[in-house]
Image (cartoon, rainbow over all chains, first blue to last red; front, side, top):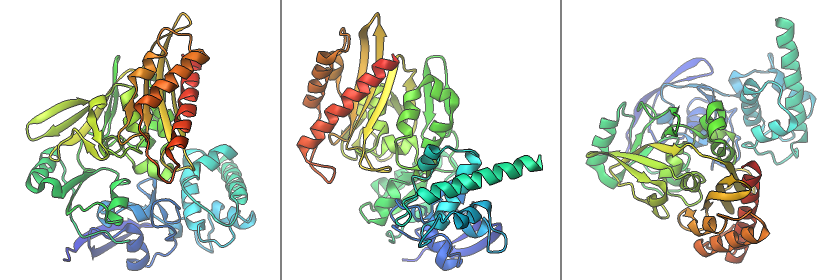
Length: 164
Length: 284
């Protein structure tokens, strides 16, 4: 039985329109239909956070949302946060502070961290660890991820002050 | 992981939701944040031919605080609970519990209504709502009815809500005294090995009244009247704590699973309840 529906989703500022079955998980829509492969599939069971995207201002695991639920919504993935020529301060900080090893969890980590710093621009180490608890990394032991987020927070705060 | 195919509905008002439920009976399910239902559908442990997404139905997203009670709409998320400063002031146990549920991403999506209506013994809000003596309001074709949280849970995933009814909001009497939600879990994001919700009122150094409920230690949450009775009138000393734990252990009925054997769960339940009472008492 196929019951394809017409959906419209804004991804990284671009409106996408397509036909899909409502049961399609958003992570597959992004990766396989729209070729937006930054968000990764790690566990596919809502635990690891590798598929984290931002939807209408919330950090969401894209493996745990049907495409039908995302119809009409505004989705941001790592591709919408920064690219090789215009790194986001978080991306730069992960690079400078070795916040990644294999890199598989990194798009989800950084996407989640953008939202964390939006809600709490100067988090303590404990607040970072608690706020990043939905993202699992099997390489780093998290120490350098925390350092990277702290460094980005400092840089973003300094840039904001300089602008004011 | 691909769930079975389903018809998807996103109605804009409750009348349409009830019409779809009436038409399809238990072939239809309502969904709020979906973070309990979608994983079950992906595993094909839940078969939902007709899925009703409540996100566009109005009137269920507010937290209304009056002089004597708090009304929480079914679509209020755990993140909404955590972010509401006024709620944290009048009923801090709600925030303390919400912070121990799942992880940040899940708390943006997971709702109070879903957590209490689902009937999963692992969910934290059911025990908390029994401790707070909350009332759940459900609506069906014949109108609204209120069901006390302490009468709502019948067995795992079996509740007093009928298939054609929707839980719309939870009403909590404004809590008094000291509070604690204490939870032992293997890792962030896990369900409780054991958890305890305690509200306690101190009067002149003795316990005037107390409410105690336990999570994930039976196929329903357990409101332990006996544990409370063991504390009332005491100074909450070691003997009273021991009596409360013993009474609670008589009310729970844990089963062995990957969180441990029964003896371990009873042990953890005792440790957690003792900590919860002590913390609540220190805040009373």
